[in-house]
Amino acid sequence: MLKFIHKKQSPLSLVSPLETAIKRGEKAKTSFLSKQGGALSNIEACRVLTCSPPELETMRRNHQVLGLSVNEELVYPAWQFIEGKVSSGLDKVLAALKEDGAWTQVIFLLTGDIRLDGAIPLEKLKEGEIDQVVRAAKCYGSHIAA
Image 1: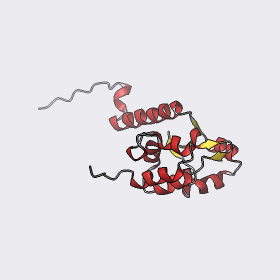
Image 2: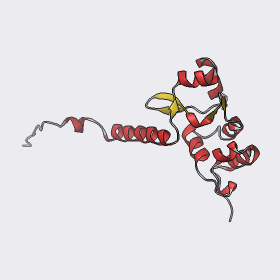
Image 3: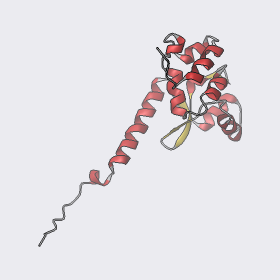
Image 4: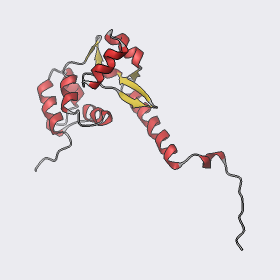
C-alpha cells in the first residue's frame, strides 16, 4: 500500500514556471525600454502628439506609431517622438515590418543592421536616410547570400 505524504508547499511553489518566466520577460522588457529612454503611457503619448486615445490607437493599427505590450499595458517608446511628432519615416519602416510583431520591430530599429553597414536604423532615420532604412526593413529576417 502506498502512503501519501502531504508536504506543506511553500508559496513559491504555487507559482508555475511559466508564470515566473512571463514575469521575468516583462521585467526585461521594462528594463530594456528604460535604457532606451523609457516609454509613455497611452495618455502621455496622446499629450505629446496632441491627439485623442482613439486617434492614437488608429495610428498604431495603421503602423504610424509603435505601441508595445508591457505588463499587460500598451506603452509607446519615447524615442519615437521628436518635438511633438512621430520620428520622420518611422511610419514607412513600420509599414515595411507590419508582418512582424512590435518587439521584433523594436529590435530592428535599435540594433545595427548589415544592410546599413552596421548602423542602427533609428539613428539613420534621424539622419534622414529613410529610403535606406525602409529597404533594410523590407529585407529584415531574410537570409543574405554570401
